[in-house]
Image 1: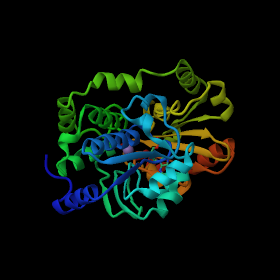
Image 2 (image 1 turned 30 degrees about the vertical axis):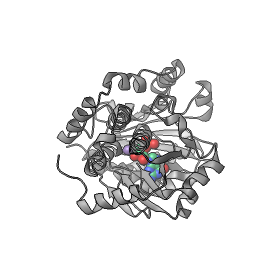
Image 3 (image 1 turned 90 degrees about the horizontal axis):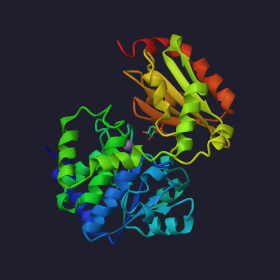
Image 4 (image 1 turned 135 degrees about the vertical axis):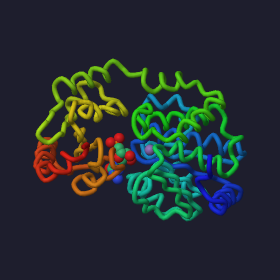
Length: 344
Ligand code: 5GP
Ligand code: MN
C-alpha cells in the first residue's frame, strides 16, 4: 500500500511519541464504534510501544463497545472530571481522534482549548478547525480506524498492532461503513482487513459483539419507531422518525439504543434523505442521512448547528420536539430540486 503521510510528517509524529512521557487520547462526545475503536487501538499500540497512554472520553459510551480492550480503563470526563482534566493538562502529547473541532467534545472542549503540549489530529470529517500541530484529515477514507492503521503503518508501528488493537480497528471500519455496505469500495479497506485477519482477529466475534448484543427493549424500541413513528414523505423523497423522552423512558433507553435507527427510512424505495429526531432535556438531537449528492453536512450546518459528512451528519435544533419537526418540514420545499436530483 502506498504511503498516506509523507516521511517528514511520519518523523514528526514519531518524534512526538518518543519525546512524550504521558499521552492522552480523546474522541468526540457520544463516541461511536469508530471513535472508541480508534482511541482504544491507539492506546494499545502505544502501550505495546512502551508508552504511558490514557484515553479520556467526554461522556459514557454504549454497552456494545465495552468489550473493546482497555475501554474499561478509559476515563469518563463527565463522571470523573477532576482526574480527566488532570490527565489532559499533564499530558505532553494529545491525539484527537475521529473529530476535528474541539466543540465536538462538548463538555471537554474548554479543557482541550487550554492544553499546551503537542497534538496530532487523525480524522475523516470535512473542514478541520482544531489547532493541532499535525493534522491528518482525509475525508475520502471511510473511518478513522482505517486512517489510524495507515498512519501506524507509515510510522513503522505495524509490529505494535496486536490482536486486540486489530479488533478495535476492525470495529470502527465495520461500524462506520454500516458493516461494509457504504463508503466501503476502496481496495485498500480490504487490504487492511486482510492485514487485521493476519493479526488473528476473530471477525465474526467482533460482528456478534456489536450487532448481536441488543437488549430486548432495544428491539422493541426499533419496532415501535418503525410501526408508530416513521413518517414517509414521498413528495420530498424524505422520511423521518421522532422519539420523545417519554417514549425513550418507556423502553428503558440506554446509550447507543438508537444507533442505526436513522437509516431505516433510507431503505424505503425512492427515499434519499432521512432524519432521526431525539428529544433531549433542552434541545432536539438530530441525525441526518442521505443517498447520492444531497449533502446532509451542508443541511446540518445551515439549519441544525451541526455538520458531519456529505451522507451522514448530526446536529441540534433548539426547539421543542413538535416545533423542531414542523421547522424541518418547512425547510423541505426549498430543497425539492436537490432532493429530486440526488440520485439520477
Ligand atoms: P450521528 O448521526 O450518528 O450522531 O452522527 C453522524 C455524523 O455526524 C458523525 O460523523 C458525527 O461525527 C457527525 N455529527 C453528529 N452530531 C454532530 C454535531 O452536533 N455537530 C457536528 N459538527 N457533527 C456531528
Ligand atoms: Mn468516524
